[in-house]
Image (tube, rainbow, N blue to C red; front, side, top):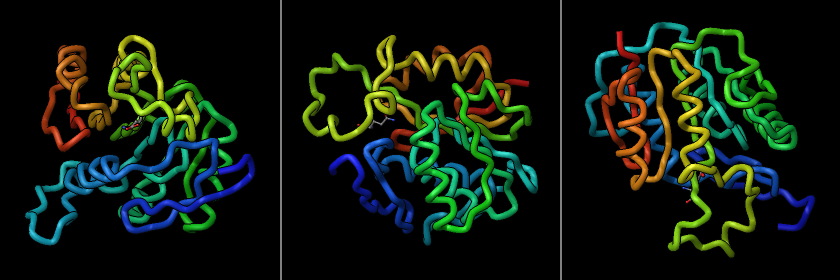
Amino acid sequence: MNANSENKTNFYGRDFLITKDVLIPRPETEQLIDAVLNLAGKPYLPGVKPSKRKLPENPTIIDVGTGSGCIAITLKKELPDATIIATDISESALKVAQKNAVLHDTPISFIISHLCQKVKEEPDLVIANLPYVDKTWEWLDLESLKKEPSIALFAEDGGLKLIKELIDTTNAKFLILEADPCQHEAIIKYAKNKYTLTNIRGFALEFVLKS
Ligand code: GLN
């Protein structure tokens, strides 16, 4: 991809514009969408019985670190009654997300923010595919990852810096996080006093706030 070119990548059955400013949507992230649909009591696979709805009607959902906007936009398409807020610290990423929202005709509030810092609403659900890659993992294909912005991929503290900060600063009843499976145990342990793990779905961790 050269500096100004745009590519399209399919995510959850829809095409999204992708530039050098955003992470390329990956198949493992589609399971975060399944997790939300399941919470909303909606079918997400033809042969799987959806659970009883746990999310309230007209839920407020924040997609933290939205990048291309693929999670936020897909959720608005699948759950039209939801209010969707999407944040990113990167202004150039948010521009791509806004373009994608226009393309898909989905009203979403986009906010430039570190995590949820600038968001005033109290969400029912926080969903996040944050940067969680640890630069020192020996299995990384750094050559391929060069095509994407480092700010969207890498995090300090074994990749957990931002995930931990989000756990510390959110009080949403439901929290859905993507992380590498090798990080799951550490995240569950870190969240333990505040959030109970309810399910693991591939890369996705599903939590509920302790009452
Ligand atoms: N799982 C992605 C990868 O394989 C990383 C995505 C992310 O950092 N959020 O590169």
